[in-house]
Amino acid sequence: MTIPILFVSASQQVAAQLEQQSMIGNQLFSKPLDNQRFLTALHHHLVQAQLLTARINLVSQRKESRSLQNHDYFLTELATLLAYVEAAPDNRSRYLVQVGIDREEYLRAQHGARALASLTAHMESHFANQLGANDSGCALGGGSFLFQLNATVTEDAEAFLAGFHQRLNSPNWTLGEPPKPVTLSMGVLPLNEAINEDKALLEVEQACGEAMQADGGCVVWHQAPERSDHSQLDERIRELLEARAFRLHYQPIVNMDSGDTLFEALVRLVDEDDAVYLPGQFLTQLAEGSHGTLHDLDRWVIEHAVEGLSKLGGKAAASHSVAIKLSSPMADVAKMVPFISSGMRNARIKGKRRVYLALSSPTVMKDVGTTRKVLKVLQDMECGLIIEHIETGPASVDLLKELGTVDFVKLAAKYGASAEQTPELEDLLRQLTGIFGSSLPIVATHVEDSKALSWFWECGIRNFQGHFIQAPEVAMNFEL
Image (cartoon, rainbow, N blue to C red; front, side, top):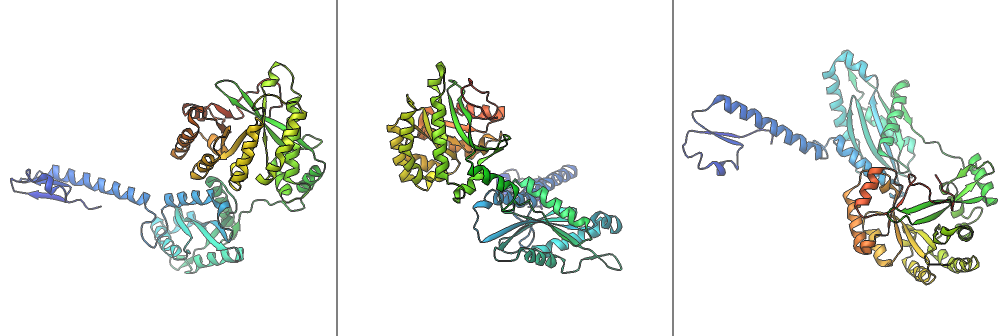
C-alpha cells in the first residue's frame, strides 16, 4: 500500500484498456512520456499511500504483532476498562502504570536524539515481551510508557509491581561510551473504582513524576486517601444515625411545557450545625444493618414525605405531588405498601397521582415479579411509579417492556450532565418512544447545560430535573 504502481506504455490501445488496467495500478501513461507530469503523479500517489497507511495504523491495535499498542487504541481500551472496573470480576486487581526514563532531557542533550530514539525503540520491544495475556501498553513519547496490568487478588501488590519494574530494567539499559546506566522510574495507580480517564492519566503521571524526582529507579504509588473504619467522620455519622437526624430536601421535576411540578423527596443526614451528609456517606452502614436498616429509613421517608404533602396550604397545594425515593429491596418495598396506604388515608391525601414511588432499575431487575405486583397495587391506590437510572443497552428497555405501564422513567444522570450525546442514547430514546408512544414520560436528570436541554427538547422530552431550573412556588424546600 506504500508503493504506487504506475504503468507506461507505447501502445495506442492504452486508453481503451484504461478501466481494466487501473484495477491493478494507480495510473497509466503513454509514450512519449511527459516527465514532469509523471513525477508529479508519482509524488501525489506516494503522499496518498502514506496517508492511507497512517489511517490504518491509527485504527490498528499495534504496528507489529509483538509491539506495544498504538496510543489511541490504548486510551480507547483504558476508557472502556475504567467504565466497567467496578463490575469486573473480583478475583483480579488492575493497575495503571507509567514508566519514564530518568533524566530524559539531560540524556537527550548529552547523547543526541538519535541515540535516545534507538534506546526507546529497544525498550518498547523489550517491554512488549514483559506483558501478560490481559495486559497492554503504549509509548507516550519523550521516554515515557503507559501500561495496564492485571494481577490476581491473592498476589502481593507491591511485590507484583516491583517484579514488573525489575523486569523492565533487566537488560541494564546504557548510553554512551563508556556505557552509562539508564534507570527507569515508575508510578502506579490502583484501578479499584470508576474514575475519569483524564483524571487517572493525570494521577499516574504525578506518581511517575514523584518517582523521577527521587533518587532514580524508584516506584511511587498514588493512593487515594482511605477513611479508617473508625475515622472521626464515620463516628459522627454513626451518632447522627443513632439520633435519626434525617431531613427531607425536595428537588423538583418540572414539565417545561405545562409547568407541572413533581417534588422528589431526598433524605439527608443533618447535624446541629446544619452540615449535610449525602446518602452515599451513610446508606452503606444501614445496608449492613448497623444503626438501623434501609427498611427503617424508607418508612421514615414515607411517613415524613406524606406528612409534608398534607401540610401544604394555598390554592396550588392540591396540585402538588411528591416522589418518594426508596432504597430497600423489592420484597421489603412490597411489605411497605399497606403502610403507604394507611399513611395517605390518615393524612387525607386526595386526588390522583399525588404520591409516586421512585425505584432504581437495578433493584427492580432483581425481582421483576414482585415489582409487577407492587405496580398493580399502586395503580389501584391511584399512586404512581417511577423507574430510575435507565441506561442504554437492552436491559433497561427489556425491563420496561416487561413491567408494562409506568408513570415516569428517569435517565441516568450521566446523560443529562453531558452536552455530547451519543448514537446509543438516541437509539434508547427511539425505543422508549416505541414503548410509551407520544406521551414520552421521560425525565432527563442533572441537565445543567442549555445545549443538552435543547438536544433533549428536540427529542420530544419535556420533563427535566436539574439545578438550573428555578424553584416553583414556595411550597417545599428546594435543594440547590
